[in-house]
Structure formats: structure tokens, C-alpha cells
Length: 439
Image (cartoon, rainbow, N blue to C red; front, side, top):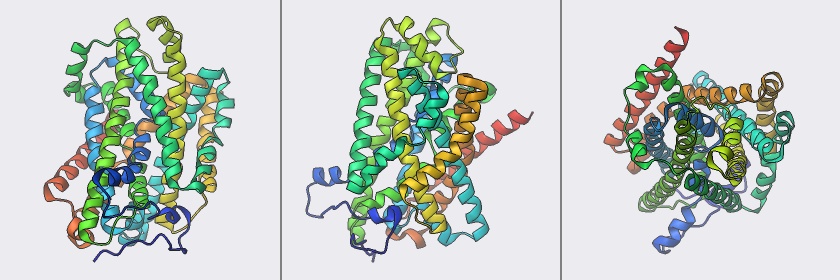
């Protein structure tokens, strides 16, 4: 029988102190249970709309119009499946992905996976540093190096809310997401995209495999959308809910956790699609096919849309995405360190360690190459994430396919086959990119 987690387990430290602190009672109505489970999915969704997404989607939309919408859609569907597996692992075993790796795999493999996970988190954080700094520059006129320095402390403001309970962090993140959504609704209304040309963009094109530039941006979108650290994050923060004692209660918890992430990732898909649609409708349609910098996009929005509000909303949404993503990257860093190394850091320590590592390359590029170099580093960081993805996906698929480990909550065979096929496709695309880059 699956044993429940007790909120009174005083021996836990770090993020595990928040496990089983959000109460869910069996006699509650469907609506009340759903409200109790809503939250982790939106923290995960934050990573799917961070500044790295902006850079790749803006570049893809300006260069290829609506053609890469199919990549955004496929990446989002992949994310829904993989995040459901991460939630399934947590609900079935009371362990996150990092813990399971540590307890299952040989030590050398664990150390390698830990190192790769840290590279992914740092790559993510570089994107947040640059994106937030560019947003501050666009909104307030601050020099890029000043903005990068300020970002060293930004996430501490929201992480301070953790002392008031995990639901408080979730509420703050959702509030910022609401602001971002409002900004993009207004932007799309101003852009007035060609809907008849937009819809065919959701059908995959053979050019993805024959055009190296399109493949590079497609992998950037994949890396910016399906992020390795989100699999660790989701398998950890789902456990903030009281998941139940019996198998029936755990199955119900899994349904609600999956519904939570599905709704949240649908929201993230709409935001990512909106970024690419905005770029295609405003830049590609006006012959601006080489928009690679966030600052260029910001500067052209007002003259092309005829509204002074457009660039301001663009900057506000960018800062909001960067701030939210730094919070979730910090939580993911905690889960990775605690799970792989069995070491519990305080959130602000984890934040500063990761951020100090990230600020170095970001500051160097900003000083040496300015906005153009910073944006290129932003896109490159997303390709790095795509290359890291198989090292999180493959263990997750294998663990959740094990009946011995998962018991009654083992992943259905068709779903395992589909997830395995997705992992092979990701590996194949990455090898294609590497071969193309080398040759």
C-alpha cells in the first residue's frame, strides 16, 4: 500500500519541507479538489514561455513567417506528455526524478546526469538574465550591464514569499502570468494577423529537415519549450499536495495533477504561439526578415503597429517572463541538488550560486558584443537545452514504464511507446544539428 506523506515530518529540509503541505480531502467536491491541485502546472508552464522562447520565436516568425507554428504545437504536445510522466512518477513513488536517478542508477551515471542537469539550469538562467536585462533596458533605458547586475537579486523578492507557504509563490507567479497574457492579447489585437495564412503554419513542413537554418531555429524552439529542468521541477513540486493513502486516491491525484499541467501548458502554448504570430504578422509581413534581437523587435513595434503602447507592453511582458522563470529555475535547482546529492540548500543560497555562474558569461557577452551578442547567446542557450533534453527524458520514460517501481500507476504501454518515440526523435534531431554544425 502507498503510504501517505505527513505534513508534520519535521526532519525534512529544503524544498522537501513544503511536501504535503497543501491539503486535499477525499470528501471535497471535484471543483474544490481541482482548485487545490492548480498551481504546480503553472510554475512548470513558466519555463515554457521564458525569454529564451521569445528570442527563438521572434527569430523564427520574422524569418519564416508562420511556418514554425507547427514546431511550437508539436513541442507543446510533447511537453504535455512528458510533464504528465513527471507527475506520474511523483504521485506513484513519492520521489522526484533526481531522487529516483540517485537511488537507481550507478554513481558515475548519476554524477554525469547531475552535471548535465546543472548545465541545463545554468543555460536556462543565462536566458533569464539576458531577457530580464533587455526588458529593463527597453522599459527604463538602463544599460545592459546594469540590468544584468540587477537580475542577480531579482528572484529573491518572490522567493521571500516561500516563508508564507508554497501557495503564496504559486499565486504570485499566476498573477504575473495574467499580466503577460493581457499584454499579448493587446499586442495580437494591434497586429491583426492574417488568419487564413496562419492556420497552415500548424502543418509540419519538409523544409524543417532540408533547411539547416530552419532546423537550428526549430531546435531552439524545442529547447526553449521542452526544458529538461522542468521535468525535475514538476516531479518535485507535485508533492506539495497531499496525494492520498490508497491506490484509488493516488489515481485521482494523478488525474488532477495531469489536468493542472495540461491546462497550464495550453496557456503556455498560446503565449508561445502569440510571440511567433506577432513576429510573423508585424515583421515578416513587412519584409523585416532578420529580426534576431529583442531590442530590434521592440524598436520596430511602434512604427509598424502605429501604437506607442505596443513596445511598452512588449517590455513589461518580457520582464514578467524573466522574473517568473528565475523563480522556477531556482526551485528546479533545489530539487536537482537535493535529489542527486542529498544536500538541502536554502533557496537564496541556491539562487545566488546559480545566478553568479550565469551572470559571468552574460555580462562578458554584453560588455564585449552588446545586444546582438546577448541575443545570440540567448538563442544558443536554448539549443544547449535541446541537446540536454534526452538525458532527462530517457530516464523518466524508463522509470515510469517499470511496473515494479510504479505499481498500479505504471504508464500504459501505448503511452510509453509514444514517449520513447519522442525521445528518439529528439535524439535524432540533435544528431542532425550536430552533424550539420560540424560539417
